[in-house]
Length: 64
Ligand SMILES: [Zn+2]
Image (cartoon, rainbow, N blue to C red; front, side):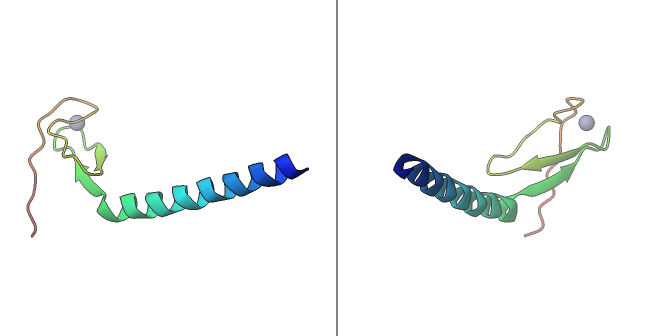
């Protein structure tokens, strides 16, 4: 029973951490649309220079 309780507590912490990091990654995520195939490409921290689907080069739009 104690082991189950500890396991549940660890699981809860992992879930909370996952939600925390997920919400952070969603905020910093950028959406790109491939000009060739229209594929929606999501990037988190690193920029992707080519489409994952068709390999077309992606032009980054600066909106700052
Ligand atoms: Zn593409």
